[in-house]
Image 1 (tube, rainbow, N blue to C red):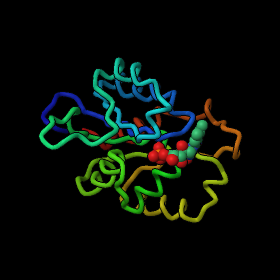
Image 2: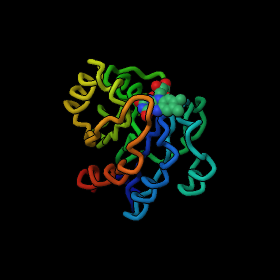
Image 3: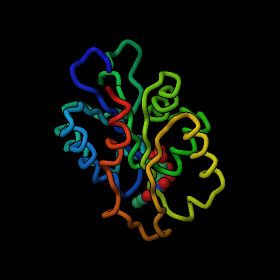
Length: 177
Ligand SMILES: Cc1cc2nc3c(=O)[nH]c(=O)nc-3n(C[C@H](O)[C@H](O)[C@H](O)COP(=O)(O)O)c2cc1C
C-alpha cells in the first residue's frame, strides 16, 4: 500500500448497459474502508451518472488525459477493478493498445505490479470471437484476476441481477495489504 492510511481502488468503467449500477461496486469497496476513484472510458461516461459517482467517491471522474503540468486528480492506485469490462476494452488491453486513459492505466498496471481484476460483461456472440478467448488467456497470464461470467444472450441484455459487483473486491482483497 502507498503511504496513505487506506488502500485506494481505481474502478475502470466501460460502456455496457450495466455500468449504471457502478455505485454497488463503489459501496462494496467503501465498506472495506477503501478509497475509490472512477476512470470511465470515453464511451463509458455516457452510461453512468457522473454527478452521483463523484458525490459517492469524493473525486472527479477521470476519462481524458490531463494536460502536462496539471496536478494528478487521483491518488495512485493500490488495486484496479475493471467493471463492467467490455469486449472492446478486454481485447485492446490484452493487445497493448492504449488509446484511452483507461487503457493507458491498465496497460501500465502490469509493469507497475498493481493487482488488477476484471468483471467481463458481454453477450455470447461477442464471446464467440476467437480474439476474446485469446485475450482472456493473455490477461490471466499477466496475473489479471478474471471473474466468472456466463455471457448473456445477444440483443437481450440480461444478467443484471446476477452480476456480482462485489466480486471485484473479493478478488482483490487478498492482494491489497
Ligand atoms: C446500449 C448499449 C449496451 C452495450 N452493452 C455492451 C455490453 O454489455 N458488453 C460489451 O462488451 N459491449 C457493449 N456495448 C458495446 C460497447 O459500448 C462498445 O463496444 C464500445 O465501443 C465499448 O467501448 P469501451 O470498451 O471503450 O468502453 C453496448 C453498447 C450499447 C450502445
